[in-house]
Length: 322
Image (cartoon, rainbow, N blue to C red; front, top):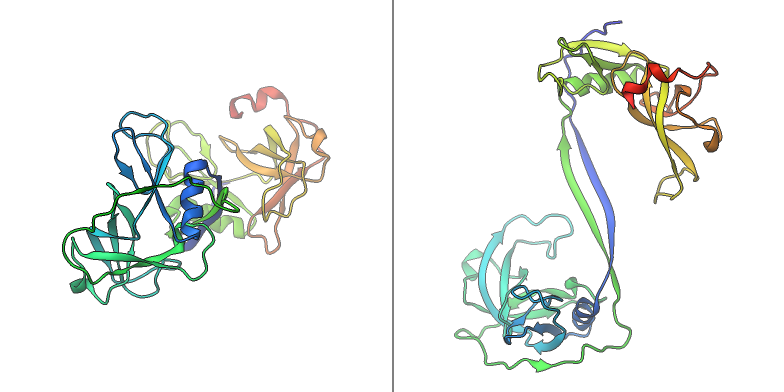
């Protein structure tokens, strides 16, 4: 069946967000715990260079480095850029400058923000000092920002002091939220596919050269390199070509483990799409199982696929779609 074309190209705001959890080695643990205690630590390399923020391996020789030293909370701006429009969750809710600051006693610069009234008040070489956050937890945000120090001229002479890196209740891990906000347009072909799902139909596009039907459609055949225009309704039933059993529960996903995700070749499609299998014990899912969609509330997309009760498909009918 050939479906009628849809002229509408969809657009929607999307957010990808997840917490990134990592453990800390002894150097990063000491650095972040030190910030909690209003102490800035760097690490000294074999040639005496002091690196702030500290790293665990010498960037020149790749040797492991562990000699921690304390540097000053004052420093010099080496370069900067003005940010007139702060974004969500940035350190300050008013215009500020991004700055690289070489703290006194360090040979490298630390990236942070400078609280300044405007770009005319910022210049390379200006002296700044740390403004500590009132509530500190052992994170780079324990430095609330930098602020003008008021003392112009050269950097203060500061000899880094050896530090053991030992603190009470050290920070051993951090959780850093990652978030990406963007507007996504799926294009002509996938817009028709998504619009079809709202009507409980699955629409692909046929390549005019090899005649393969792509679901979801891509707008072009990746094999032949030609545009696809002919829209074809496929399914709704299909065949499980291969599958995996999921035993790890995903955060914020209300599905009990174990469950099955499968590649499903819908009838008439030239390649398989993936979907969750339900309505059958996980250990009874098999290649060749015939399934049909169970639509989500409102019919926007299939929530999962369930067995149709039909005999299993012969391997020869789907072996090219695995």
